[in-house]
Image (cartoon, rainbow, N blue to C red; front, side, top):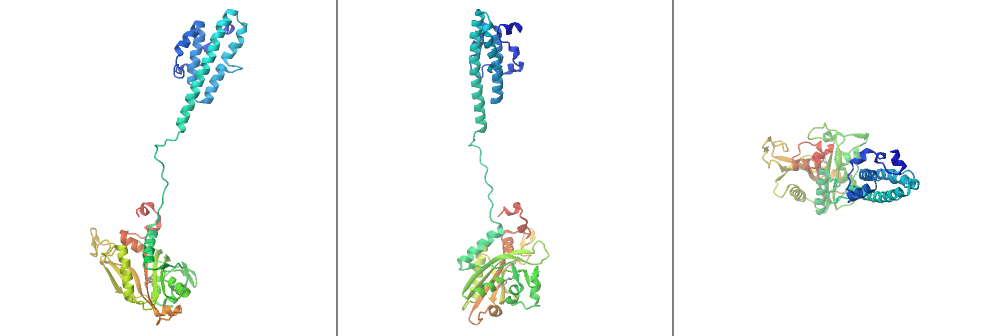
Length: 382
Ligand code: DAH
């Protein structure tokens, strides 16, 4: 070793032994010939060069490569550079032989370095490259809630029948929710409309019918309006009762509006919702704000009117074969009086339906609470 240094011979022992793990021919071909040529000058040069080439091949990244090159060719402390500097101290003969070999080594190692740098850069590019064959991630697309879908479908239908949308407050005066709709103060009809009070006379509306009163107070007939919205009742919550749900009321007021107009409208509606073959019936029932009052039933949507399904009693119609679809009737003269209309001059009909009930009957949904739970396993089915 001392000899080698003195004579400017390269010693592979100055390079880490692990460098030998690298490949020889991977970066620049023809190394065997180069090594043979160096061996003629001195076997130590050849051995050093070989380890150096293998070591450069092992560089993991550009920074590592740089470090290895500095060890070999660095201007100040690179092993090869120092040997070149020491040349003048050698006898003339050796100086020539060593000089030629050292310059070849310097030049060839620079080539190998360039080869390794190109390979590393290429690998980095491949790693970062955009793989256009990779399937993209689809953006998550939501959709309207099943109740919103039904609401929109109904509004669309009534729009086609000439109805406009009127929205009225969810927090309502007792007067509009009850009194002007002909609920006398202590009438038992109020029992079915127990609700949450915000103040002595202010409550969460129990139906969308108060909208009629507001609309009629604002406008003169003829009127054809639908009133969609959320309503509240202080219900004991169970599979078919919630303390909030959704309704759409409808109101048609003009001269000479008759019960026949109501029947025609309701049948159009039922057929549009349940298909043209569904059987309907209208039976009399009491609501304070209509006279006569009626209920529209449809033959069981899932049991086809038989009251029975494969599992036994039909869960939607509860065995009766008929499901109540909505309430309706001819607007009560007292309601017209309350809004300043002359009940002799104008007549009208109204109807009101619950959206949850329609959705449950149409899709056979057994549990009303599902609508509000926001469970995507349920919601994404519609
Ligand atoms: N508002 C009534 C309720 O929620 C339903 C109703 C019945 C609405 C008859 C109407 C109607 O428009 O004419 O119980």
